[in-house]
Amino acid sequence: MRVITASLISVLFSATLQADIDPSSLIKISDKVNPKCVEFYIYQDETYCSTKALSNNTKVNPDIKNYERQNITFDNRLWQAAWGQQSETITSVEYVPAGDNIDDWKELVTSQFIPNLQKKVTLAQYANSIIDNLQKTGLNPTISIIEDSAQQIIFEFRINAPTNMQQDELQKIILGNDGFYVLHYVIKKPDMGEKLREEWLKNIRKSSIKQ
Image (tube, rainbow, N blue to C red; front, side, top):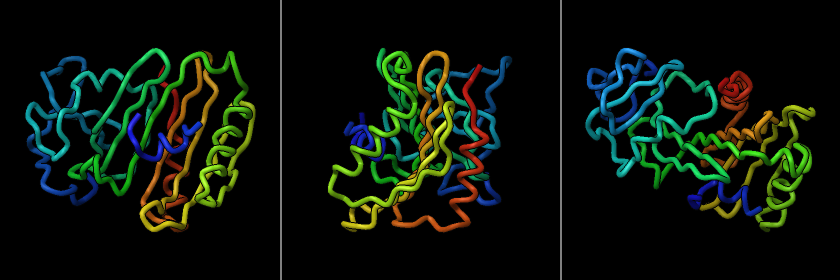
């Protein structure tokens, strides 16, 4: 797993498009249109792609379009699927605002599927292990439980110091019949602020497991 927020936890167009991505170069994916793409973007819950590299994210596996196991609600910006992996133990897809560099991200959405984990631990046990491991990092995170039920847990953690580790993350964990589904939104700020927090809480709550 990449050395980013998701791995830390496992230590256990808007009106203006981002950067220089030209919307006229994007193709909307459908059952009738399935071009040979090299980059994939999400806008207003629809998938678009480009047949040539438009961003500064390199070596994106074109199979990434098949990895996603969740219906993710983003904000009104264009987001790019910038990195992904699929294995027997975990499937992950990472998204950044179009034009941003995955290796120097400022905002990140990560979707994960962990198959069969529900056979080993409860949702509460898994969430508690994540929180315990966060507390053991020595980064003194501020952790808030936002929602806690047998089927879904949402929490936030904020890291204020050191400066290079500052971040504020919302995370949702869902119990599925076939495993746990995890969705993260993280920004490199010690506090995302109430407006952004409300927006992304609404987004992650609206997001769902693909059927």
